[in-house]
Amino acid sequence: MRADPRALRFGAAVTTVVLATVLITGSVWLLAAQALVFASGTVGRSPYTMLFRRLVTSPPKETEDARPPRFAQAVGLVFAVAGLVGYLTGTTPLALGATAAALLAAFLNAAFGLCLGCEMYLLIRRLQPGRVS
Image (cartoon, rainbow, N blue to C red):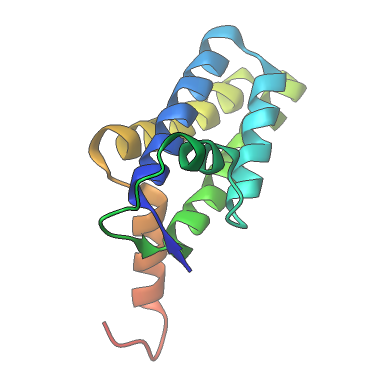
């Protein structure tokens, strides 16, 4: 399956705004909503990508393998769940740290096209025994 890199960066930009808002407001519900977005992104059904497709109808000039961004969504989900655990248990450093880490990754993708989760996926693939680089 292939992914439109423009949609991925759009999703990262929306995620950046959502997670920044979570840090400012401490909204557990908004972080839970973002966790659901991450979860849906792991199966290729991100609402942000679907919104992008409705707004931008031109075909992409290039596409990329969808597996690394899906893995990145799973990593985002782990951080969002950790943030939720922190907020719900009153463990503020965990809540803020996990949310801030997810925010940083989303911002790097949105602003510079650097997908940390995608890079993790590729590194893990290269480190698997029997794989040729």
